Image (cartoon, rainbow, N blue to C red; front, side, top):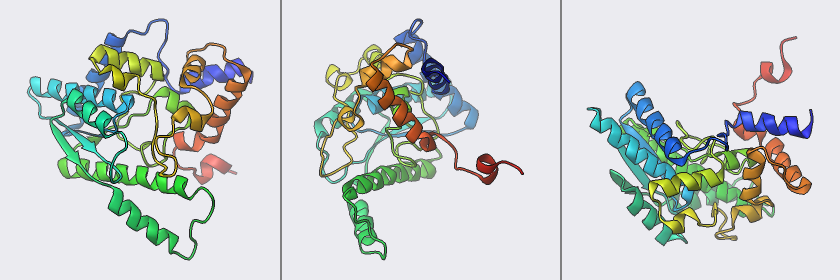
Length: 281
């Protein structure tokens, strides 16, 4: 397979929107309608999403609120629950508060994952096979992400709702999400949108400029607070977006993107099965 064929394969697999016909207003409408129709078809009572203060959760949250309002306008019953999930005190608290104000959710919940994370981590460190390598804080960061999703599913389950994910094309391509953490969800309204297109949809929706242009960060590692995604990945999102839109990118960046895509394939797949891996003999 040539490099160009692999690029085309990745673009198709991630359902990347056509940059030549992209229209932010049309995409916003299509994704609101997707959420509203899915709520009607499933009979779910609403949507639940964790709001971090980043552009992805802010845009997804506003789409969710608009979808729930649309369902109610047509005689249905749906509410959007925005969930704040800080680990103790969030470093970018002002951004998260601004995101909630813009989204204007039907319901706002705040759940501090700090106590549960620390208690679980202390027990892991005290176990017979403790985590001892230099990436301790990285592993604890994944615990935070998974506990956040546990909380969202608990909220959704108690209310008969669906959990929303914020996965978009750029993060999906390089696997920049936690497996069974923020990568777990029932619906992903941003799927197929490169990072720049998420921002454009955000601008169309009226998202505050500071949130649209905020430096993306997962902020999971306590010893590296607010570490920019692009620093952790070794490639800029603008370059990932270019690659996903079929453009040529520097060879070194292409190798980085493809390397991440291949190494993180397990995150985008169902669990491995005997027949799937070995086949029938």
